[in-house]
Image 1: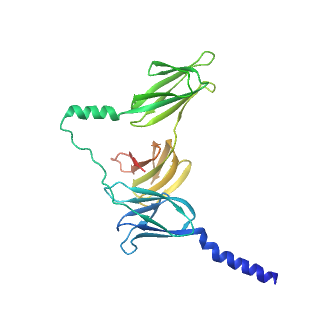
Image 2: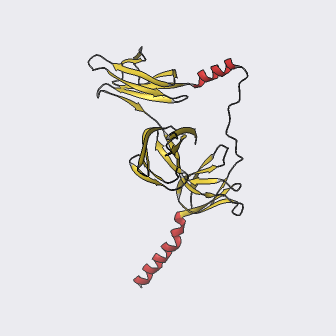
Image 3: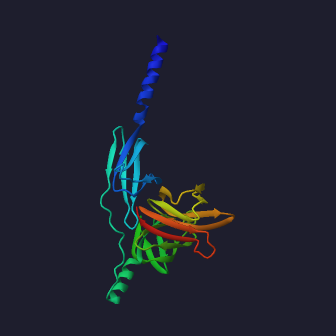
Length: 276
């Protein structure tokens, strides 16, 4: 009798096992590229009213839908026991810079865009900070400096009783960078906040990548990785005995797009960015 009860329980568990996954119906026009959690999921078709993703694991997932020449769309979906429907909105074209009829306005626009913000922390809190030779008294937990020109800037920290420390901080256009002067440990540290994603194209398509300490075999046209901590990361690509190396920047809520070419006359790495 007990054996029969155990068998019945096992059958019940087998019946309920599919509840650990759900379905996602992506409603969209045909011919769109769909990615789930950074991995290519398929091309939408008219037959499937878009793309049907079956047996997706329960939990939160990120969904990207792409169309050439248009801004990509992304969704955060919570897969539960019931099927989920995701409706893709009308795509917006990738904006192109309109030609300026008055050169002086173009110059003003460029000056406005090529600046960022610098947030300075330190250990201990009170010290003197110099940025490009200009001195600032830091007596607050965070010292915020706006309107910093994009590019490399020399920064130093000093306080009686501690050896002075110095370093270089890179400001990117429209970004906020946090730098920490650790006088106790004698280090200047750039602190990057948030997470972004990475997309890699390569010629040829198949190559081997080393990123964040892992070897990745790239076999498809596009390689995607998501939820990457913001900051600078080494990237190495190898193919047919050749090895290319660079350092890429992952920005908060931005997709870093890297195009790699092993052609002798080509630029090895081309890096661009777009919103996630």
